Structures are given as structure tokens and as C-alpha cells.
Image (spheres, rainbow, N blue to C red):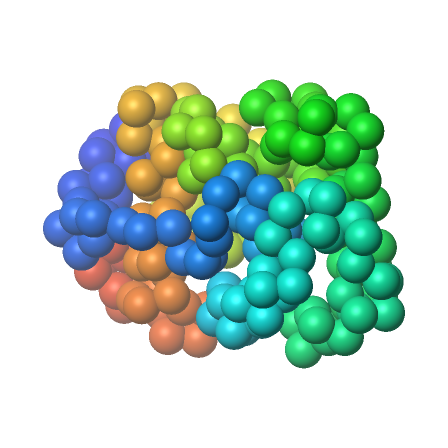
Length: 206
């Protein structure tokens, strides 16, 4: 089976199982989304969503976040892990948004990736989900599934992102990113599917 045919089947099945998708991280605006995505590193979306209501009640703007004592910020996000590093990254990012961008989240990959705690994947999530810019953020979760479905032979997330962007229309990237995540959690988990068990694997790996 050609890779393009596998991609067609994958997209068809994702549309069947997840015809509509919502952004999994609760947020109010681009800044709170950026903070939530930084917090999500090595932490589940569920846990992040449990943490952010109290955090955003204290600081929901760059100015408020920059003024929050570091110890207070670390305490508020402690349960998501890596709190010391994340609290420093978030507060420094808030200060840089005030100094460099007039308190606004920038709308370019380069400017986002220049912020502490913001890598290419995080920037892609913000560009896609906050600003509607076509992006295909690939994390280890999507990388694993793309290889399992033989959509890529990428050795890392960068190579996998490149291959997925070639296979799927740009207009579908933002939705597909979320559909793959949701499908993987529900049907194609690391322990629950050996590459032949779930509906998509049965079709693309006959």
C-alpha cells in the first residue's frame, strides 16, 4: 500500500471517529494558551486543566504573571512537575512579552521560539490553536502513531512533521494534529495496540 493511500485511510478514519475536535487545554486567550502549553510538557492535559483555574485567577495577563512571586508561581503549578523550571520560564516569558511585544503573544514561529520554554512544537500549538495559522505540531505521541501507521520513517519529530505536511493538505493540518492525539488516547495507545489491533492499524497494516 502506498503512503498516500495510507494517509487517505487515516484521514477518513479520523474524520469518522473525531469529526469535531476542541482544543484540549482550557484557556482564555493566546497568553493563557501559551502558559498552558508550557505547563503541558511531561504533564497530562487533564492535570494542566486542574492547575490553571487557580493560576489564572491570580495571574491571567503578562503583567500579572511577571509580577507574581516566583515561589508563589511554583507553588501554584507544583503538581504538574518540573515546577522550578516551568515557573522561571513562564515568568521570564511574561516579562519578555511586556518588553519586546507590548504585552501581546507574537504571531510568528521565530518570535515564539525565542521565548523561554517555547520550542517548535509549543510554537506550533499556539500558532494553530490561538491564531488559526496552519501548523502541524508533532510530539512524541504523534511521531509514534505516524510511524506505526507507516506514514513516515522519520527518526525524530522534525522529520515526521516534514513527512506529514507533505502527505496531508495544509487546510487539514490543525485539525489532524488534534484528531491524531485524541485517536491515540482512545484507540491506539502504547499498551492497547500492537500496530494491528485498532481500527486504523487494521486498515493500514493488513
